[in-house]
Length: 256
Image 1 (cartoon, rainbow, N blue to C red):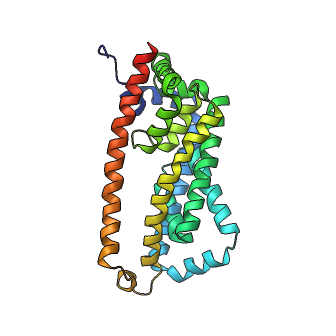
Image 2: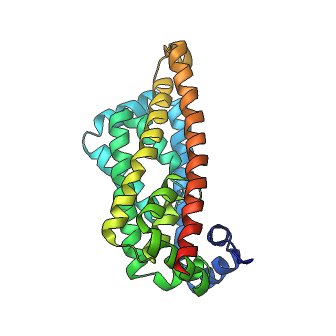
Image 3: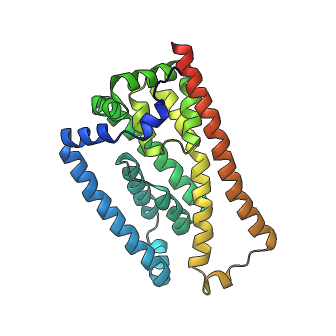
């Protein structure tokens, strides 16, 4: 690569550019901080209530009807758009609504929130995002790689832990990929939507049972499959990360 700074390292570690953007768009980051604190405090309160007042939480969810899932989709979509880390919220969807509905909530929110972020970035914050991912040179390298490996790269990177999903939506918004390609690659979020909903459902069975873990009947095979699933997820993430890095570097080389 001729000593060139790694594009992936630049995307992940650009503190100077981020500080500059904060000074350029102070109100955006102030509101993001305020909403972030609200979400954090709310999560702490919900987590505390979840383990200390399960009957109230259970009754609240049962009485919410169809509005409960719709409100949760809206909250999760907003969190994705506002760049908040969402794994805890996605796990809680499985805890509150069960595996099947939790999976649907996570997937819908990922698609809606991701598309909103994509449009916001493409039409309103393009210059700001270009600065954030590394000035013109880095943005150009990103666009070159996506020109040659657009769908494959965006699909693989979304499955790997290289870049958080919430940030990737905005990074892809300044790339040359089409809205159709973005939607298709974003559909891969079904994988992590399933994983989060599953572990959330397991947590829900523990929390809402009468005796906690003692009241949850898991066979040795169930525990084995659960642990195996964790290791399979980690190994898959490592493999996909290596593949996506290779595709990324190949895209840059072919575009030169």
